[in-house]
Length: 335
Image (cartoon, rainbow, N blue to C red; front, side):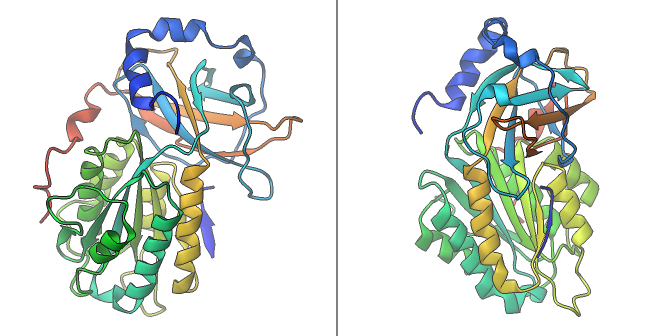
């Protein structure tokens, strides 16, 4: 398998509401140890977000040199740099908080033989997830449809999601870009602060009205992490792993390319574990003006004995005041 990239208490939403009114106070309460020197890390994925609030929030996956999740770290174990300047960490959390997740599944003709494995993988993800997660299914061939009934925006029930995954026959062309664009808009309706998409496809597109550049721009302006899983046949002329890598990297996610379709179950279980083991790190940019420019982010972490750890998160964001202009209002984008 090839691999790329690397609830108790007050809710995050409540914290954000309070934080916007008290950004200076939050900065003053940060530990002085946050300004200590720290070794750099070279193992981050590319990606961008766009924010119009004073708090930049990152989801960071931390692993040791053997690829294992690293738990038990504290705020003082992390350093965050924006455009090379050390930032003050104002929010830090490492809890299994509920997530809003969209399962975006290719149901074009080229995926017909893989449908049972794809459905099994998606259900494995559901069973490994937090029971309070909000999930939805987007099925696509040349058309994009929501799997759940129109009256139900999200669900966490395996039986409902199984029906949503198997409700469309595998046939026709592929509108991958349209499906991702619609799924990103639908995520904005979720009540969860943490958001993700899992895209299962061969990466080809021959039916979308959107272009790859438009989808990448939308992903870079989103606060969602996108994981992609490429399923290919040897004679699959539509296969395009490069596209799946680009989309994942644009958000700090990962791209997976299993040699056997059956391995997708293990991959989805791993994605569920990744989401449940992430650290939430928030900071107020020292350069507070929203000038529309791109700002690079580098996050490093060290273990209790100083050992360098591998951090995967977004590598930047666009400081634009109009990033919410892409927020969805309804399911009218389905075609």
